[in-house]
Image (tube, rainbow, N blue to C red; front, side):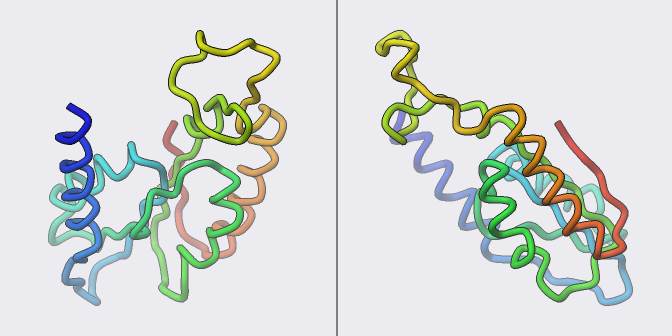
Length: 143
């Protein structure tokens, strides 16, 4: 099962990295987010085909701290008309000694740490929003 999932994940990532032909007369839409947004980017691009150019970073944008560190490079120099963004689930992951765990029952609660506290998450979102607001694009938050 893990091998099949990994194979599917690699194929989806390759498809996202290939890119799409863009029409310079259409508005530009940027989707920024974690693996959930990777899952719906192609469907959105298909729904907006002929109406908008849909792009996303060629990576899983992960947790909000990664967003703070990379949002400027993900935006780049392109004129964006809409920026759709989401962060969240990765911020709630539990870590043991800095490593993601999948089964909390194997650990003592005091040995685990959430990737980000609620306060850190809110602060990171504020920083991300401040940067994307400078683009003049319409913002869409997904949660």
